[in-house]
Amino acid sequence: MQAKKIEYDRLEFKKDQEIPYLKGTRIRADAIYVHDYITENRTPEHIAKDRDLSIQDITQAIEWGTANEGIIKKVLEREYKNRPIYKK
Image (cartoon, rainbow, N blue to C red; front, side, top):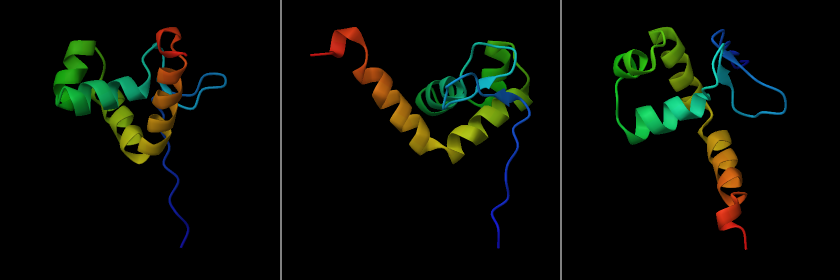
């Protein structure tokens, strides 16, 4: 049985990026998933209201984040290590 490919019509990948952005914004899906949803423990409805986005935008960002935690972890670790203050 072949895995079902999930389409995210509210997310877009920008050039050379592993994490998508919400279409028409500068907000990466991991900011919604990791910061707002996981760390701050906010509901999708609360996030949508605070960020002035649709619930569908937020839901897709959370769904993508849930399905791609490994990618998020890898990218965030790489970005953290590449910050000038942390370079040795």
